[in-house]
Amino acid sequence: MQNTSQSQKKIYNLVGKIASGILSDEITFLQKLVIDVVDNAEFDIKGGRVWKFLPNEKSYQLLFQYGDIKEIPANYKLTIEDQEVLKELYKNNTMLRKETDQILKESGIIIYSVTGVGNIVKTNYGKFYEYVLGFNANEILQSFYDTLSIISTVASARMKELQTINKQVKIQKDIEKAAEIQRNLFPDHELTFSDFDIYGICIPDSAIGGDYFDYFPNLESEEDRIGIIVADAASKGLSAAIQSLFVSGAMKMAHRFSPKISSLFYSLNNLIYETFPLERFVTMFYCEITESSNRLVLYANAGHTEPLHFRKEDQSFRFLSSTGGVLGIVPNQKFSVENIRMKPGDILLIVTDGITEAANEDDIPFGHERLIDLILKYQEYSAKEIALMIIQEVQHFYATSQYNDDKTLIVIKRKK
Image (cartoon, rainbow, N blue to C red):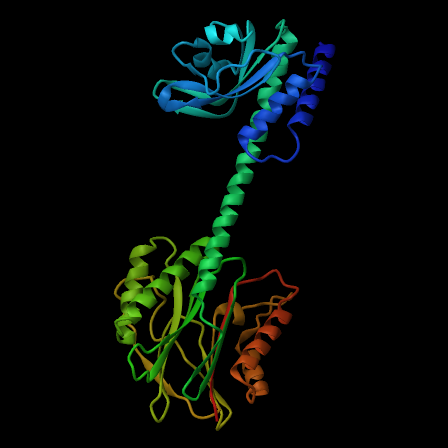
């Protein structure tokens, strides 16, 4: 018994070594496995083949053959009805048989063993392995049967590993594609409108994020106003990115019809409520800067982090509080529109909570007070310089913390 166990362990280690290494795809892996098994003198196997199950044709098709036997016609198929062993393989995994197929007998296969590997395919006429490995030898011994059982176990495990890796690679490629789409949605950082200097920046927590900002120049020829949006989907990862893309598309579509701000928020709220049944939580701030003589700024705030309005003349600050609830929570919400006037030297800072809630190692958030201090300190600088200095301070602040989130800010400064 001990000798048998030691022999099985030796075979298992040998098969494991053969099945190791970098995998490219399932079929290439199985081809290499067959070659290595046939070429290994310890197995004493004469030839090997890889068969793939074709559910619609109720057959197995030859994908690969190797060894010292007469070549079988390419793409040769064995039907389920003609090969009872294929019906029984699901229950037994590995089986020994005398060959009955005339073509295979003519190729030199007299006694063979087959083993199933890979996933189980369920059909209305039975369950079948996705792949079958067939091997033949001059003499089929019990040790050969044990070898094939081990080959099946190791090969199936490695194929599941390969499938997991391939899924991860595909997911990563999808994420990278989504990130590319998302990056393309963001506008150029810098924008000049009338006597306003504007600079926006978004730093996602990962490849894709839930923050979104954009600029909407007036579509009419006079171009007397510009819209600016900052939105934050509260969910994480791919779901947040999907919501972000949705808001972007909806805003671009709605802007073509120049709706009132209150109507825009009302419609977008209902769209999010109806489209995302589980994760509906989106905050948004939208403002329109006009070229009127007093530089009126109209805005609505759907539960978004309160923007800061810095008034140059008296060095004071005003928070632009919510004018309605978070988007998507309840249907048919109404939103009011407020306004401020921006005088020369005034600054409007719009951020997402990834800025204000960025916490240090002691779990202390960056907060609004530090933003106020930075605006006071850098008020004479350009919008771009102010934005980049704030981002630098925030990143330095939370550098040693576990907390992380998307970070977006827009600095709007009226030139003197």
